[in-house]
Structure formats: C-alpha cells, structure tokens
Image (cartoon, rainbow over all chains, first blue to last red; front, side, top):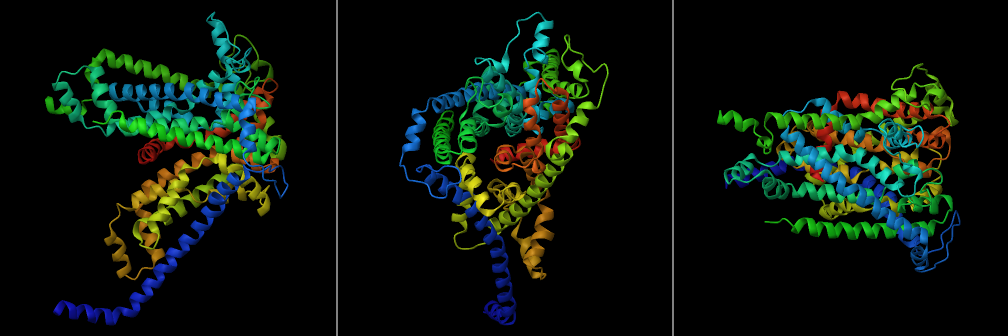
Length: 312
Length: 289
C-alpha cells in the first residue's frame, strides 16, 4: 500500500522531468540512427541493387540509359575464354595460398607455444609483413623476383642452384605471387591461432597426458577439435580474401595486369579491366555477381563441413 | 615442484625437453630472418646508386650510399611522395576518427536502447558484412560521378564512415557495461550525450584502440577503390603513388625502394612502439569474428 502511494507521489512530482528525459532520449537515438540508415542506404544498399540490375543491361561508359539484355552478360562471361581462365586462376591462387598458409600459421603458433618463452622480436618479425603496406611489399617482392638482378636468383646463383624466371614465366608467376601472399598473411593467422590456443584449458592436456596420449594424439584429439571455432574463422576469411585478390596481382604481374599471357588473370583484375579500362560496366557487374555467388556458396559449404566434422 | 610446473606447463612441452626447445627456437629465428629479409633488402636498395643496383654478386650494403632514390620520389607527378603521404594521412585519420565515433555511438544504441525494429536493423547491418566489394564497386564509381565527388577526398572518406564490423565489435563490448552506470548518470541529470562521451567512451578505450588500429591499417593499405576513383596525381594516396612506380622496374629500382621505404617505415616505427596493442587488437578482432 505504502509502496504504491510512494510511486504515485513520485510520478506526480517527476512526471514532467521524465517526459523531458524521454524526449531527450528519442532525439539522441534519432540523431544516431538517421545518418546511419542514410549512409548504409546510399553507400551499401543502393550500389548492391544497382549492380544487380546493371548486370542485366548493356550498361557502358557514361551513358545514362542502358538497354535491358536479360542474361546476356552472364552468358557472355561463361563463353569468354579469359573469364573462364580468370575463374580457374582464382581457384588456383586460393588452393596455393590457403592450405599452406593455415598449416604454416598453425605450426608456428604451436611452435611458439611449445618453445616456451619467445623473445618479443620474434613475434615482431613474423607480424611485420601484416602491418606493412601491401603495395609497398608487393613492389619489393617484385624486385626480389627479378630474373637477372633480383636477390632470389642471385642467391640461387651463389649457391649454384638453378635459377627461375619467376614472375615472367607463365608457369611460375602465380606460385610466385602465392609465396608473397603467404609471407604477408602468415603472421596474422599465427596470432589468431595463438589467441585460440590460449583459450584451451590446461586440464584437457593434463587429462590426455594421464591417459598416455602421444603428441600427435593430443594434437588430433584435443587441440584440433577445441581449436575448431578459430580454424573455421581462419579458413573462411582466408578463402574469401584469396578469391578477391587484387593488389598483389596488379602490382606484380606487369602492365596490363594479369600477365604474362593471362597466367595470373584473376576475377577481380579482369573485372577492373573490363569495367574501368573498357568501360563495360554491365559486363563487369555480371562478373562481380558471379564472384559473389561463388564466395557465398563456398562459405556455406565450408560452414557446414567445418561445423560438423569434429563435433563431439 | 608439481604446482610450479603446472603454472608454466604447456601442452607440447615434453615433446621437446631443453634440446628440442632450443631447436624450435633456432628454427623460429631462422624463419623470422626470412620474414625480415625483404625489408632489409628494400632499405639497402633505396640507398644504392643506379649502377650498384644491378651488379653480381650483390652488395649487401651500398658501397657508395646515396639519397638520390629519395630525391627522385620528391618530384613525381602531382607533387610526389610528400603530397601522397599527406593525402594518405588525411584520409586515414579522417576515416579512423569517423569509424570510431560512429561505431561507439551505434554500438551503444543497439546494446542499451530499446526502439522498434532494433533487432531487425542490427541483423540487417551485420548482413552487410557479407557483401563483397566486387558487387558494389561499379555502381559506387557511377554514384561518385553523379554526386560530383570525383577528384576529391570525399569518395575515400564519406562512404567508409560507417563500418558494420566496427558496430558489431562495439556492440559486443557494450553488453559488458552495467546499466546501473547509465541510470546513475541519468539520475544525476546528465544528458544522453554526456553519458555517451563522459561515461561510455572512457570505459571503451580498449576495444576502441583495437578498432582504431585495425581501421587505420585497413585504410592506409586500401588500394582498389582509390585506384578506381582517383585520377589526379595531386590526390594520390601512398598506395597509388607506389602503384605508378611498378612500371619503373629495371629503370629506377632505387627510387621504387625509396618509395616503398617511405610508405612502410612510419608504420613499422609505430608498430614497434605499440606492438602489444597491434597483436592484441588483431587477436580480439579475430576471435570476435
């Protein structure tokens, strides 16, 4: 009884103040929401819709009106030998980079953990390529790969080993870019794995030890299953990133990018050439959407596989 | 004995013993040399005179160090590297500031306010994380033309002001701030903005630092979008300025190496001073993802 009376009294006295506070909160919320929604609508939603619609038109250059052509641009893409090559090269790049990157990064994280206290400069060294500019480091690597005066061939020569033509050979160009890409991202994935490893409780390892498990069994039955969320994250982000590779290929493959002889032509580079050199905006949009659906499908498949495989 | 052992025990420790651990350390050190070697070679090349760049066997450090390579990049199109550097700094600092501001505001709103459609809007913003740039890049290019923003800094700053990832990260963190703190502020008569900037922001410094480093690194490195939207050399950012040097291979490698050094060294210096924050920031952003 008395509680009710107190509440009524309080509401009477503070009513105006509460109303004012409520209005103030609404103004505050709107001042955040209105620009947020406007920004996402203009710079995210509109371009996606426009790109989707544009892929069904003969959108070219700066012409304001574009003729509707249905699925023509998609049909054209799959008939275009360069686009087919770019799809194959994109998958090839992902296959060259992702598995090796993950195995090396996980091994490094485990090695750091097993070797006890690791000096700060070691961690700094592995992480250095991650924080430095892609274009700058890709340029430096392009010079390292230079056939006659690049450091790599010079070292091979000093060691009396056969030299390679690296970026100017159609066979070696893509693996050369892949080696650079692994060097660049290794430290990133290593740090993510190291963070994942610290979340695994010591008690699991102690239990495994009591059961007499050997090191491989500990890794296979304890570490790997418990690291699964981290592994899922790393694999999926690495695959998504590798399928969209642009900068390293653009810098390292020469002018026009994608060479020699289309051996490093990936979808993102071909889309850039198509849309911004040839000004075929509709065709470029179709290429972008094909890439998007591939990424989406692969991500869903990986989520399924990685989620179910080691559940226990 | 057992207890002190447990504190420092690591799962694969007995794999190794002292000798094994020394071997691992040696291997890790060797690997780290491979990670650093390209940077060393970049700096050594930057100081070499033209002739010395192309000799066999290579000189490990320039016999006759010169600043010619650096002088060369001062006078490129549009004002050269001083201008590119200033542009990069301007764009990156603006984007980072805006992302931090909008992320802390939106993250707070989504975590601590109730309003109709809140969950739906939040899920919607998160779904934007899955949109690859390959879909929106062409319409964005056309849109910038229609807005009359081509050949200005606007396309590099304004579309990047809101980050779904930043909103996600700050929203996650905001859930750990007790509501009582906010209510106490309201009872004391603080305005909503006071609460945000005097109570919430000071408590959010750790995730803001991580997000700031992450955003700075991403924006500093951004290449494809500037390449598409910036024509005039006076607006070049560092990656664009470097990109134009890719054709110089063979003609002036020292200048190319000098340009790469200028782009890389400031980040390395900041990184060496704030290494822990970089690594923790990456680990945080990775785990939350």
